[in-house]
Image 1 (cartoon, rainbow, N blue to C red):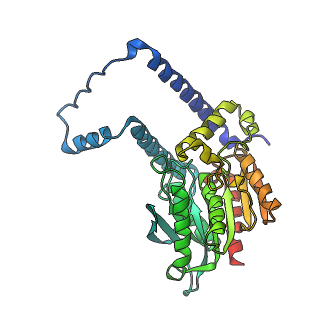
Image 2: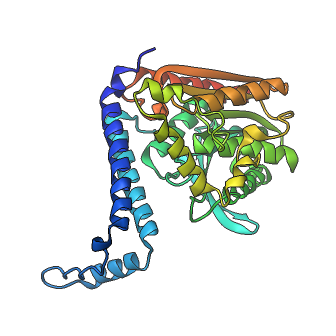
Image 3: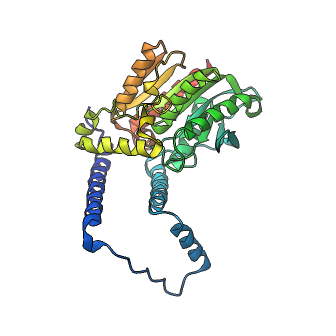
Length: 366
């Protein structure tokens, strides 16, 4: 199916961005090799009127970071601003719901924040719940991002399910397996605290999108290997489940007129950021598709997009689960891209995506 017209201008901008980035990297490398460009830079002049104490402190903090850390901070600020704009222009705000915040200890690793979105209930009967993981290539995003928060609110209300959103640590400041251990600690805590937070421990699932889909899928393996909590469902949206890149479907990129080099470079960049060592990509908790066995995992609903190179990951993971006897389905949305769920205010396929996720979550009421 052709790409939905909604994406045409976005694709043009994205192509230009990719080529500009590639050209910028070439320039940087050439400059590094050019001997006459080397030398100490002149100090920047102070602003007129001098620096205030606040400005001075901000600059001191910024200068204490290395160049890569400063670049990451800029990138994350830009991503948050972009996300805020997306919600206001092509997204759907979330309804008001009751929220509770919790800090969960993680042995040997940083503690993790878990925010629970509680559906409206009559009485004190416990409700089903999903432990949810946001996307962002392991290095951006968070439960405070506007589109993420809005999606959790809408899904909580429409599916009448508590959403326990995990604000896992970002890479490269924290690398694998920190995020996996945080996910497992949050799951353990949710079951141990189920009565306190109003959750039915017999009706708990996991939910994740993109990098969050990787964590959700890995968590089902960790849970099977350790605690064996009775997980009832896993919903994986455009998940990356093999960081070796063996299942990337580069036909999606060719169809968009984007050279395969860009897709493979992006996955390598994600893996380098998230993993401490290249060989970690073969570890099953980093790449759930590479587990020796997928038997005993919870039923799965997997959603993929036609114009997304990760569609191959979703297809292969669904096949692996089915081969192991797991109830699993894979649905591919035609004419759309990796970030489709964001665009519920402008794209019919995104609204259908939301409805299908809600329908999957309602299975927890059975």
